[in-house]
Image 1 (cartoon, rainbow, N blue to C red):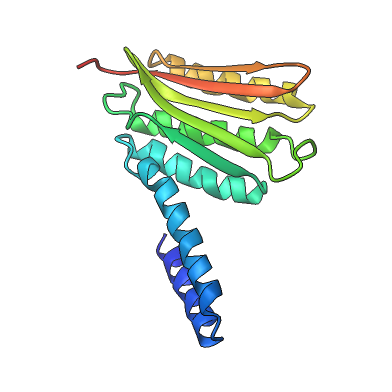
Image 2 (image 1 turned 30 degrees about the horizontal axis):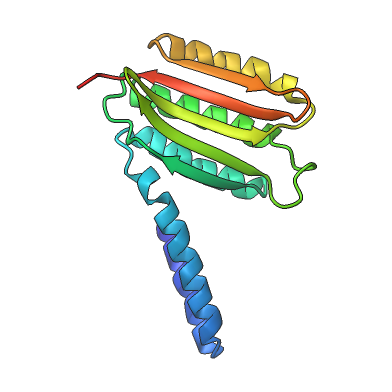
Length: 177
């Protein structure tokens, strides 16, 4: 994060030195928008999951994909240990970006991420268009599901065959207030 911040300052400084004030302003707006977009993710009550989402941003950049977050919960009360939930999410995102369809989309592929709380559970839903070889994703996701099952968590994956619309859902038990 510190490296990114210093890099942003260098870019802004460069634009200003080149007397490109409009471009510096655009860059500042872009950086600010990205920080606002990720601010709710950074404040999740399970820091390991927040870290996994931030690492997922790096994976998205590597896959030339974009992410859109809908954060409706801070995951407070999650009963799955943070290290287990964070590792499961990281591994899941790794496979999502490995199998996200880069051919079908006209612009960068998109991963829609919903973070929610429903009754006795909390979790996240990942929606994206999957590549034609998506069957190869089944075994790694089954291993993640097995790790979560030890703590009554669950990972499921559904794919609509024709559209290849994929939904991966991680359900985690939580304490109820």
